[in-house]
Amino acid sequence: MTTALLAADATPVSAWAWIVWGVLALVAVAGGVGMVLAKNAVHSALFLVCTMLTLGVFYIIQAGPFIGMVQIIVYTGAIMMLFLFVLMLIGRDASDSLIETLRGQRTAALLLGIGFAGLVVTGVVRALGKAPVAGLAQANADGNTQGIAKDLFTSYVFAFEVSSALLITAAVGAMLLAHVEKTKAEKVTQRDLMQARFAPGNYPAPKPGPGVFASTNSVAAPGLLPDGSVAGRSLTALVPTRELTEAEAKPKGTEK
Image (tube, rainbow, N blue to C red; front, side):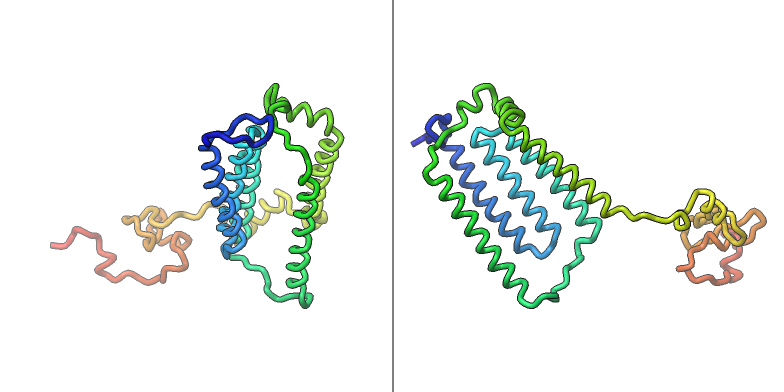
């Protein structure tokens, strides 16, 4: 059997598509399991990226190229990369506290999660068990993207606008919660910074680098001032300071 039908009026799907489906299904499940079991947060995010990529291919195989590319470009390429950036900023070695503030909360959360998953699966099975199977041939008659746009801005325009308003409200709320308001006394102006920079005892100019006006490029060699004295600011405090011996201070190449 070289072809199969996903639905009554759907276009035939080749055997290669079913092979790709089977292989990527294993990859998606492995990525999901790895995301849950990975101890490193970055590895967990990368496992999730793998699963999201396979979901995008699944959508494309099922005659949904638009939602498949959105899955790959938006969710995998943008949102998950944002997750990775956040993990890198907060530190991938940061670990949560294992001390339970409420006794038995993890067990209760596990049981409630299993129960909720059972309810969702039961509801979906009962809702779709007797539903007639219909393909996407009619919906994609004028193109997949055009069909989505037509339904989105006609039949589901209210839900679309409500969802957009909800997302905007969530973004504004997150910015307000993350914003730290400072009083006028706490704000440091550019004038204050310049006054502190040129205050007595401070050094406003850039510090000379190691080896400036010296006969070597070693970081241990102090910079020399025009009068020949050592510029103390050019030598790092990590290098111990010592006086040169007479042989070391003697100009090189003058021995006979």
